[in-house]
Image (cartoon, rainbow, N blue to C red; front, side, top):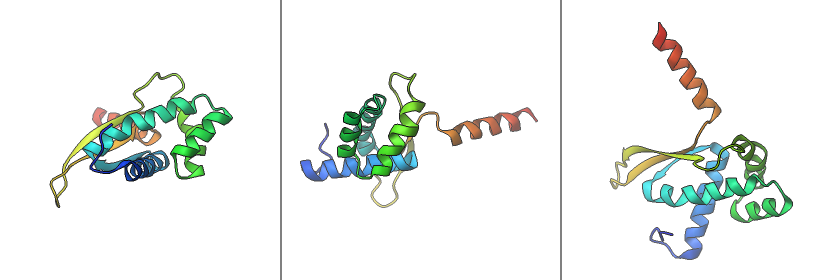
Length: 128
């Protein structure tokens, strides 16, 4: 695992914070390096959430800060991907941050509801 220029405890706190935000909002903007480390961390949580057992819930509580994020993971996200074997997240490059020229990306869940409506609207507009 990349260290992201941090020691173990701050790095784990950063990943927990990013993962909690990603689960709650289903998309976040961050640097490319953080997103590449975050992707397998969250994908393992989704796979764990598919089991939907008490043990899985407790493991998720240890990895996420908020109980509401764990509830959303178990009730919405894991069932959404129950037929999918992996690849739950997508990383989209956004360009460079103005202040320090860091590579910025958007990391988001594949197959979100708002993405489906945008695709349907663009298809309707294209036919006119």
